[in-house]
Length: 391
Image (tube, rainbow, N blue to C red; front, top):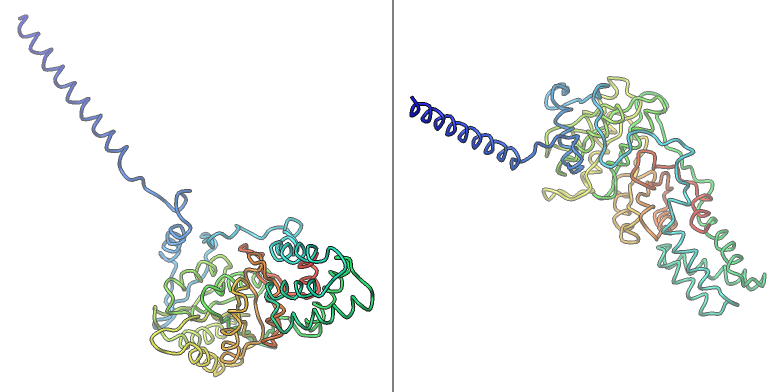
């Protein structure tokens, strides 16, 4: 009997040891397994989060729009965030001023201007000022004219203090902008207004379109977006995020489709649905050996078969400086540009590029981008801009 009890106890001990070992093994496996990452995880990159949100949006939310056209409509129960954009408009009283936005350009000009004028100006002082203006991307010819006029006025008025020179410089720079130039965005007298947005990739075209769409929706207008940049990877997905955010419709074809066909279908769809404003996103680089400028001209011709193009906005990256002006000229000639959107001004110390654009291209700057937030697209006002640069 005693032997039987001992055997039973040994069996129980062995079973217990086995069960404990299995439990420890399972716990170890759970601890070393790769964690599941959702779109809400703080460890997810903005790109991964965007992809997850796009997939959630498209699942059950895509409607056939006819043929290979897809019309994606915003759903009130799904909010898709644009990468690095705030969740909603920032109250006006909490928004940074333009002076705060242009802090890099302001410090670049103002600090160096004070350093240059620490006594009675000499020829070397004026040469330093001209070099400073050139470095601020105002342009060689414009900088020369401005300094010549400043020198004459300072001599006539016997001015030597940095504050006085800065005041004269502000007056001269304001004069370079045509105050009578129409900087308002154009709308159709009746029906759907059509805006084309053009520019080199990386300038902020799609983000600008998204901000425009959000602003228009806040003002009570219905908006549709056309994904005519069909060759850049995920361009339509990026635009779709903004479309969902703004509550706008979007028309797109398959990747690699003819951009002009996308624009044409988008115009027909917008007018059939009574949309107030259609904004067309276009390509910004060469592809398939088809010259980009010819393609843009084709998009415009095709759209005009269905009516007029009310606005063609050229998006220019302020950080590109003078290098962007050559390409800007080509876009202006090919697409019939009516105005400029100057982006990324908050990230450059060379705000003088705004002056060079109007002097070189002869086009009005209508909007400026001064940040990545949804509210960071502002109407351009020359007096305020120059004051912010030299404050």
